Length: 288
Image (cartoon, rainbow, N blue to C red):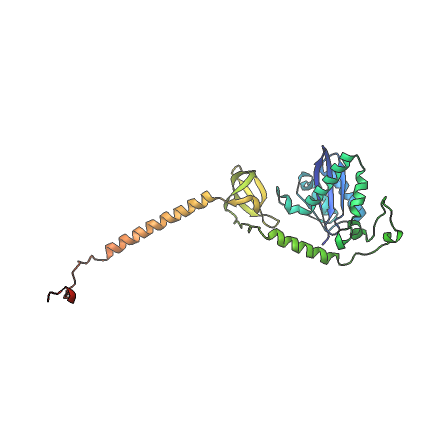
């Protein structure tokens, strides 16, 4: 499946939109004057007209990506829109990675007062091991830069085995990332939980549904607000569970006591008696 990821970021007081291709690693950065849906859609249409419409666009579900206007756009242009879990950047890792790269390029260009587009040109032509450069994977050829280049190196050449190599890289990365990863908790609809409202602040809520994405849940707060949160930001309400366990223990104690009382009432008491066995002293204690 061909998918791209998009995200917004701020650098030196300016707003930028980044879109990255998962297969090639090729990404575009464009300065925008507003984060409105109409502005973002206009830029995406330009990119899609150049590179084609992807099967899926992934985003963090910000206001510009969650509007009715954007829903109409991805419906009319026939691509699916996958929203990552709110406040959980790593679930949209592809976009986050290229947001960071885009930021670094922009900040460096602003610091050196150099050309951002030229920096992007060099970045896209930089080889990534045996995978080739992003522009080679996307266009099956190198693009000319200001650096001296042999004409033959600009001829079209298909980079083979990219999908298999990328899959192998992703599998190795997943093994490393899962090495010390704790198992995600599973919650049930109707369960009382705590969700992280902000750093070190956990507030009570209730699970009302399972979210559309893996490990995400729809929760309802005590104030009636409804949010979607990743399991990473949800934990079991220990106070609630302790209360339930306490009630269970109390009920068990009462039941045990009632059972014991019933047994004592039903079973007649018996009189203790001494054994009638003849007792004999050991030989060593008998006087000769």
